Structure formats: structure tokens, C-alpha cells
Image (spheres, rainbow, N blue to C red):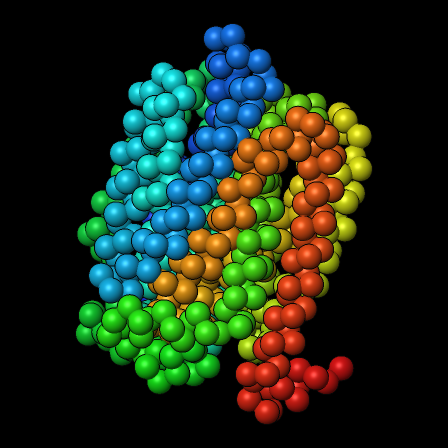
Length: 443
């Protein structure tokens, strides 16, 4: 880890332990999150058996997803920042406990009112988990390795997503019902909750070890080394006055909508358009987070080596390529099988890496130790306001215009997102030290 080249053996070992616990814990969140996406074809079939048309059932699930995502966005905006005051570990564990309880409630439900209450409650409590992880990370790792460290931790939600989808696809294939899947998911997360409660430490200083360095360009400047803000005004004002922060929030809106669309609807798209069975669709949908994992590692490694300007420049190029891929996906005819799978994986390659910067390394760049939870929460929260459209809005597009129309709409959105990334490149030049600004302007 570049930020701690002179780290002592005990510090390095505790950093590794912290990384493993955070990674495993957040991956576990996806047992109680990706399960709904995998179960959606089964839920639609169950609702259809009760006399609901397939189109109406699709819209009902889409509405459920959208309301859950709105709850998630609300929690990101108004609850996640509490980690800056009460500590990241507390928020991390609370999110896990809430996910377990509401997943079991969903499994016990027999109608949309219970499903809705359980899913909204689940997403609301899960909303504080990532910001808690970011807050703990700010107290263990230095700024010169933010890209790499947050890339590794971002793999947690991709690995958790992929493992959950693959495992649940295999269980569906042998006849396991969706309610049993939800109970298994809650049990797996409960084990990870106990491990993190026992072994995760809030900070290196709390463990009697040296404090990591923060990015000197954080919005709080020297005060960014503080672990807690003095009050809410001291936390909010510097972040909300930063133009770059708001551009990153705009990037989060667009990329989260794309990511949540594929997280939610990939199995359904593969069944209704590409021609796969429900079990095949669940298994193939794991390729989206798997390809995203490769993207995250490459993007994180490159960003630490290209300096402060690296993250926005990588994002611009990637979003342009993603827009082109979405156009191809939108023009794809039905029953194209593995070609559809390949294009979906390509979208992940071009979007998930830059997406992982936003509420991870960039949030740490902005917030330091003082405001990292709030920075991450707001960036993610605004993103999930966009992500809320991935439910009912995408469902309506798919029902009205087909999946081709839905993907072409996403292509337009991604092109606009690329323009925002270009603006961030320009904005970054104004805050760089002269040496970095000159290097960025060179061919």
C-alpha cells in the first residue's frame, strides 16, 4: 500500500484485517439486496398465477424497486452522514442488522403491502453501510492509495452481487423457491455481522497505531485530518460550496441509473429478450458485476498512477465508450443469446470502474477523515435518486418501446454523463498545483 510505505508490521497487518472485514461485510450486504433481482422472474410468475397480467406484475415489481431505491437515496442523503459523528463501524453494523431483519420479513410476506414495507425498510437501513465503510477507510488508509484501496473495497459489492446471483441461480435450478433463498441470504449476512462486530476496529489511532495522511486538497484543508466535525455547519458548508463536488454528484446520478437498471432488470431482459431460462438468466446476469470487477481494479490502479486528474479523464473516455455500447445493445434483435450477454458485460466494463470512484476515492478526496461519510452519502444519495428511475421508468420504457427503446434512452443519458465528466476534467485543472496542471495539459 503506497500510502504506508514506512508502515510497521502491526499497522500493515491491521490494515489487511480491516480491508478483509470491510470487503466481506459489504459483499454480504448483497445477499440481502441482489436476491430481489434474481427472484423477480419467480415473483412475476407467482403474481401471474394469482391473476395479475405479466405486464402489470412487471410494473408492480418496478414500482417496488423504485420506492426501495428512493428510500435508499433518502438514507444516503440524510442518514449516512451520521457516521462522521457516531463512527463508521456503528453505521456499518446497523445497516447489516437492518438488512437481515427486513429480508426475513419479506420472506414471510404474502402480498405487495408486506413486500413493499420490507423492501423499503431493507434499503433504508442498508443506505448507511457504504458511508460507514468509507468513514472507517479514511481512518486506516492514506490518500495516495485511495484509488487502489477503494477499488478493492468496491469489488466487495461486485463480488457479493456476482456470488449471490450465481449461487441463487444454482439453487433455483434445483428447485429452491424464492422464500427459501431470502432466508439463506439473511443467514449468510448474519454470520458476517458477527465477525465484523468482533474484529473490526474504528480507526488505526483507536488501535494505538499511526494515523494515515489525508488528501491535502480536501475541501476542509488542514481540518480534514479531524475524525469528527465540530458541528453540522462545519461539515456541510465546505462541501456544498465546491463546484467539483456537484459535478461528481451529477456523474453519480447518471451512472447509478445505468448500474441499477442492469442490476435490477438483467435477468428479466435475458429471459424475455435474449431467450434464456430463469436459471440461465440468473447465472448469466452474474457477468455484469464480474466484468465490473475487472473494470474497478484497472480503473483504481490507473487513477493512483495518473494523479489527481486521472479519475475524471478515465471517466470521460469510459462513458463515451459506454454510450456507444448501449446504442448497439438498443439495436440488438430478439433471441440473440450470448451476444446480448457480451454487450451487457461490455457496458459493465465501461461504467462500473468510473462509478466506483464517485462515492469511494473521490468522496475521500473531498472529505478527508472529517467529512468522508457525508461526502460519500450525498454523492451516492443523489446517484440513487437517478437509480430510482431504474425501476418503474425503465419498466414502462420496456413495456411501451421494448428493451431496445430502454437501452437507447440509457445511451443518451450516458452521453450526457460523458459531457459532465469533461466538465470535471476542466474544473480539476483549476485546483491542481501548478506542476500537476502543466503535466495534465501536456500531450
